Image 1 (tube, rainbow, N blue to C red):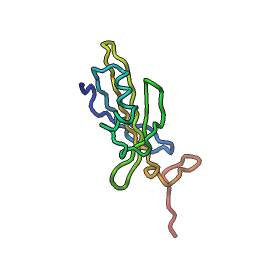
Image 2: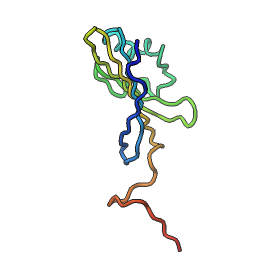
Image 3: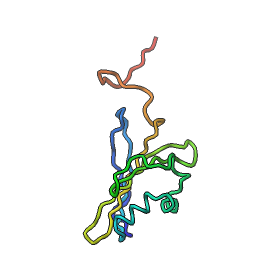
Image 4: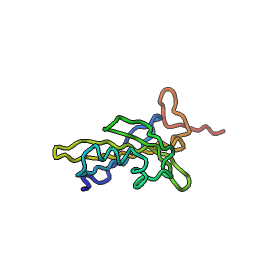
Length: 129
């Protein structure tokens, strides 16, 4: 296994316009995609490297068989934030697999509690007496 790319933070827009950083990791694996797919989707195999206690739900959030699967995860320590981690499998010409892992923090508590003005005027101003 070789670490093709180190952590790469990409800014993505969240529904309310706030910014969130995704962590993207890529690994070149010598195993064929079918073997990697089994390792990330069969609970008995997945448990060895991604324990069920780290998952908010054990069933995949989304799944495209043989290509991509995502799980909802939760922190084991307060404030117990939730995130989504997606595993993408890309077959390589040498018979190996490029495994791309995209980890996105999705906890609703990180969203801005103040809604934006309908006309997008900012910043908010406070009136004083």
